[in-house]
Amino acid sequence: MKIDIVSVFPEYFEVLNLSLLGKAQAKGLVTVQAHNLRDWTHDVHHSVDDTPVGGGAGMVMKPEVWSECLDDLLGLAPATIAADAVDCAAEHACGTCDGEASISTDDTTAEVPDGTAADSPRPVLIFPNPSAPLFTQQDATELSHADHLLFGCGRYEGYDARIPQYYRAQGVDVREYSIGDYVLNGGEVAVSVMLEAITRLMPGFMGNPASIVEESYTGGNALLEHRQYTKPAEWRGLKVPDVLLSGDHGKVDRFRRDEALSKTDELRPDLIEALDCTQLDKADRKT
Ligand code: SAM
Image 1 (cartoon, helix red, strand yellow):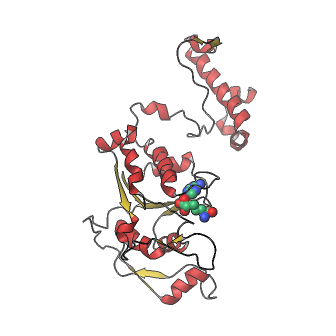
Image 2 (cartoon, rainbow, N blue to C red):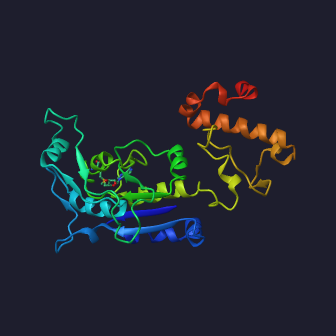
Image 3 (spheres, rainbow, N blue to C red):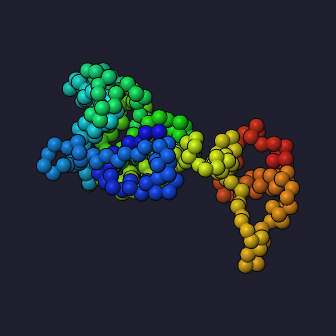
């Protein structure tokens, strides 16, 4: 998998060279390249932001800088956009369109500057955004099969809303995700969270692939994982449940499944309510 990240703080992603993701890069399973958005600026201050149209506090990331960068990394030729189409996209009020900009490019098979042919699979373009749908294990699973992901990290008050709109109109698979109901200073942490969740699901990433099969939120299971214990069997007066020491695999499996059900019911009843009866066996229904 190829991963490109665009940020005004590309150094932030040096930590991705550590731990399992670092090993996956060393093995050639994944390549990660962090780009500095300011490399696509032309002014002396390398500005990437401007004041919000309509007034208000803070600064908004400029679409022109992002589009030069993303056109390059996506292998798209710069667009030829009719001025009225841009107005429509911005205002949604021309009365002659449905709010989607009608945008065309001269040549969608252009060369990417690093020499990559643009006819290779186009990346999925992902923007972290606190007001987007929540990023889930299901999204991570789906994206773990992608060939190429391109992340754009927002900063300040965020990025101009026309950026994802424009690339969707170009046929790019654009996703916006929140990692939770709180506001971070920038998208870098959110991208790191998503990347870790995605890459660990790639075939060959984990030393023992079984360790990602029975995890919380995973597959048809969608429960929280049962509680885990290691040795010693008794620690500071606290014992591990006897059944886990019994050597009876059937009983251990049943105990863990009951544990997962009761723990999920206690901590995340919404996940229990979302289960349908095909996800429950007869013994579950007694639990
Ligand atoms: N003004 C925005 C708002 O109130 O929704 C917040 C902008 S935030 C300070 C700057 C950037 O951080 C966002 O554009 C986004 O890329 C990232 N970000 C902040 N919180 C996030 C979250 N919970 N999930 C994903 N990305 C987040």
